[in-house]
Structure formats: structure tokens, C-alpha cells
Image (cartoon, rainbow, N blue to C red):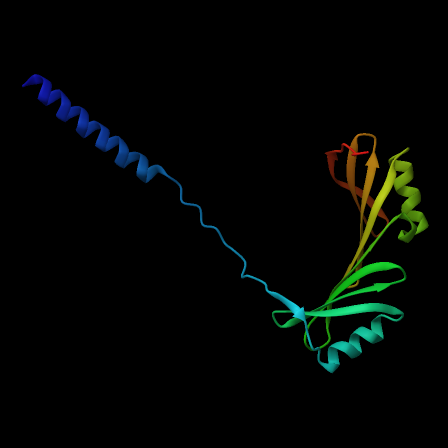
Length: 167
């Protein structure tokens, strides 16, 4: 009889512990962004194409894509890959130009070379948005890959990673 009483008491204690633990769990709410669907090449309205041709000249092989109610254009200009996002009324949200060291302004190259002596600039990405121009530069510095950001003359290290260059 005692053995049965001990088993029942142990069962009640285990049940209480499980109930207590279930209330102690934190529930984290995860906010997700709505899914963005990029469709194949798209027809573009005149306001958008006029705004694009006014802003960018000497463009080669441009392709338009519809993203929700906006238009993304990918193109080549001055031997650089570019992309720009336009609102349907022709407003330019952003422009991104992908390049290398030769596309960087000389003063930025000089600042980066001074900060990372012996480093090698691998890529340079220019982001233009709302009258701001930001350069994101990847620098191979010894066994590190360093992400450097330049805006308004200020050069700042953003991140660094161990880098094993495969030869």
C-alpha cells in the first residue's frame, strides 16, 4: 500500500513539474515580411522609363522586372553592373553600382590603403539613396576579409571575417 501511495505522490509531483515548465516557456513572436515575387521581364510605364533615361545615359542591355508595384531595372553602364528600383510614378528608391577598385574615387582608395597597408581592394559597391552615397568595399587584408563603409569622407570598418583564399 505504501508503495502505491509513493508512486501516486511521485506521479502527482511529476505532473505538477511538467505543468509548471510548460507555463515557464517563452513564446517568441516572429514577424515575417510579406513574400516578394520577382516576375520575368515586365512592361514598364512611361513615367518610369522617362525617369530612368533621364537619370542614366549610355546604358547597355537593361532588363526590367516587376516587384509588387515597383520596377527593378538591371543594366550595365560604364562597364559596371547596376540595378535601380523605381516606384510606378517614376520615383527612384535606390541605385546600386557594382564595381572594383578602379570605380572607387581616388581619395577613398587612398584612405583605405592608408588604413589597411598591404591590403587589396576586391569589390566596391556604391549605394545611392535619398541624396546619400555610400560605398561598401571588401578588402583582403592578410588572412582577413574586411568590409569597409565610406560615407561623407568617413571610412569605417563594418565587419571582418577570417578569409582563406582558395588558390
